[in-house]
Length: 229
Image 1: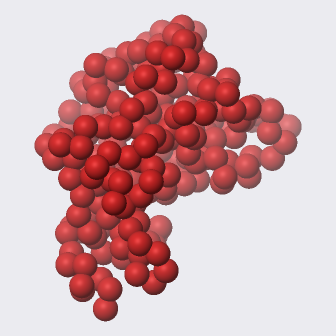
Image 2: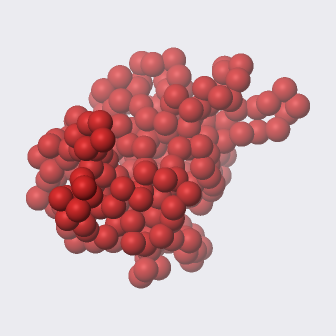
């Protein structure tokens, strides 16, 4: 699964990289967690242009009686999402990109769990594959939410966790966002493990365990021995 990630764009390349019509920048965030509002890129419904929106992390299907179900639906497995009732409609035509510059996973178990920061070897932003939905409360107010797609891990992530978020290279952005594309085989083919030789991971402070912490130092490398004392 993927339960925490980072978004930082010091070069302000976000708008260009994600094909947005206007120049925008994102506030750096170093410990994004479920149930928080997160920046997402999608094709505007009925418009055809890409837009930047804020979605709550934790997908609430349109048929849900209670939005609290979003707590349980922060991730969807790439291999089965197209057939699952909670994700089926969104997979067919409501897909999005979640900008990120790294993500966290935890290695080991119990008190010895070691948080790890995983990112591209080259640095910079990348896109996580997401699904979005709109749920309406009885009063009529809309709640827009999303989940991340996960896939099997590459050789960098495998020693840490048995799943990793699906990272989409720029060449696949247009296909993933295209609401007219509904072929499950083609879409599923985009959700593959990212090349391991382009990624790197290192241990970070257990301070990341606290969702209230949100500072750049959370991604700094630490000695594992120090963290386990």
